[in-house]
View 1 (cartoon, one colour):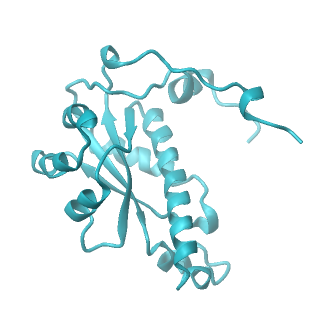
View 2: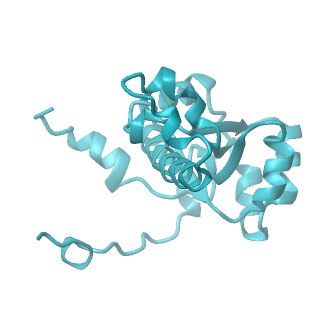
Length: 196
């Protein structure tokens, strides 16, 4: 990969992309969610462990199930979003390693090691969630990630009976520019980086 991405893509995914709080009343096609997943799943994770799991909350009944778990500041924007994704981590991700990482007995690295399971699942699902945000932007959607919610309530309402645990929520749709705040400042290279 020696050719840089086109500026239009870089603008869409990074420079012009914003965290949205308001949403247009436009449905999000399932096909776009699938396209974004197919892009995001290609990003690297340690030992190809891929612990991210996603529940797309779209129906009126599912949205009402989510409502009591939301922090007051996140309620209106989440109820208005066409889709809210519960981005979760599969705490049994290592059971799939014989399939996903057949080069070594990677399952044995994790089995019985709860500390390593927890840190690997959280780190890599968060990494995959970031890929997913960029992929959603790349297919023409806007996002609004947030952590203001009751994880225990979300897990009980949507993830009971699974080995999944919620990480954060992501509102998805076509953003309404009228709901944007001014872009916050970003640290420049000299403020955040060091070369040794």
